[in-house]
Length: 186
Image (cartoon, rainbow, N blue to C red; front, side, top):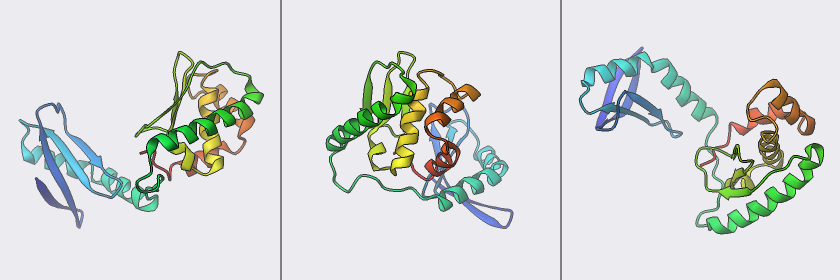
């Protein structure tokens, strides 16, 4: 149900969704600026509206962030994911071999997946996972993601030791990390 409210001389439009599974109010700001408010089915609409007003500054900040950093489209329209998966696998294996010269870490398996929320991950079982869309990123950002996950083989956290390991191969990792925020893994 579409809703609208005025707050601080601005209009906030949102879709109100009732859910039997929801236990609390949740606000989602989508990359295109749309706003959805999910509430438990028993919750009064005025409570949801008050919550939106309380979070107005956060909502505006998220919408502004998405305006400044639009989502980039990666895969050409109609392209087959399996083709990209194979190409990404070849690329990742090649870059892992290159960067592992600095570290000499052992890992079990490398998997290319269709992640929607992350670029890569490293499991406690020493498996490295990467989003196939890594293929479409600028090379410097791709390398940063690969090194980042490779370093998690030694440090499964984001401690100072971890970042020192990353810096060994990618000295400009701080700037690259900021640049990565412009890209969406989905």
